[in-house]
Length: 260
Image 1 (cartoon, rainbow, N blue to C red):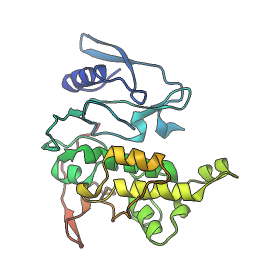
Image 2: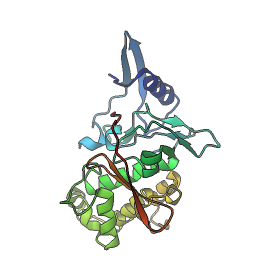
Image 3: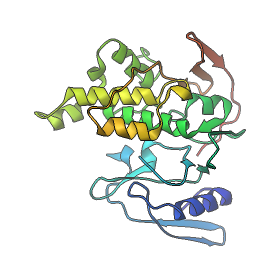
Image 4: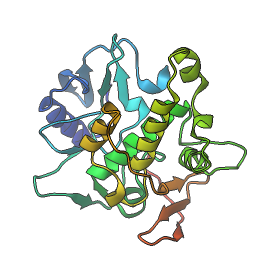
């Protein structure tokens, strides 16, 4: 059962019907009857990723890529779902602006959360957060380590700079991989994740480059710059690195938050 509004519902139906990919949830049918809206997807036995990316000829900005929107089939193949907030980009479009920011705090890029600017690099940022969550086994939103770091991105960056990247790796990964656990591969994934969550969109790699770096051990991986992030402990403070070396902090008070 879909709780989305009619516009979002029809948007998702139109978009998902045009896409076919192994990593996208397959839409089998839909129904609108007396105000009730239903989407029928393929059955995925292993539920969503947060309870236990992608290439297409159509340029789509998902705008809400997160663990709970990635489902796993019986073979643990990930499938991206929930295209209600997605936007199709034209061939010459590189970014767009909106006055209504939708998505999930903790996964949104700073330029989108603060200024309503979104692009393909916004989804790259969300993917980077997701990758770091998989490695650490911790959520970025609501992250707490006794106040030492503002969020998961801050924690990963600090440990990375101190040469202690493996300190944040989920013990499940280490235990389940032994004796074939390869620290170098984990370090590469951490570095790629940090590249994806850099503060400036122009510094983030495109998704095809991310896939190449993940698949090729010979790929040269640049050194990441500090991540951009939002501090949501009180839903009112946002931090972002600007185009200069120093970091500025913008503070705003939000009286209305649109929940998903």
